[in-house]
Image (cartoon, rainbow, N blue to C red; front, side, top):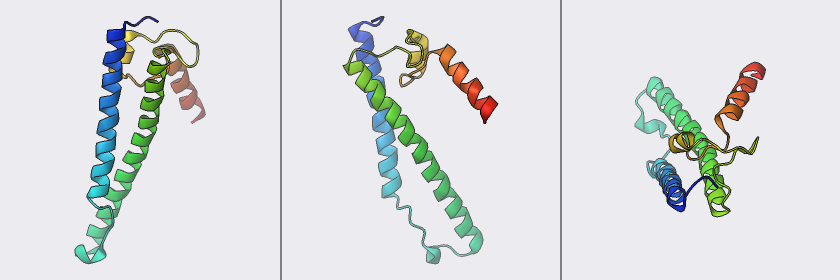
Length: 122
């Protein structure tokens, strides 16, 4: 592996911190009470605005769920001493890339290919 134990511990700490933040965000969303009460809103415009914000918040939480899954997979890879290898080509992922996005599972070349394919096929 290209990383020292100190590097792996640092990445693990970064991932666990991100994971905790996502969980706290989700708990805050639930605690704020996502139920809409039409009696609390004076007119249809306020109700529509609140429904839009609620929908946006749920979409955001859905994206965070996907990120949480990526974080959990990265933590598993650290535990198995497989962290830092691209899932597509098996090459090492650049250290700087992992510093920027420790949950990434693709090297920059494979990620660019994936984005190009998504762009081409919608």
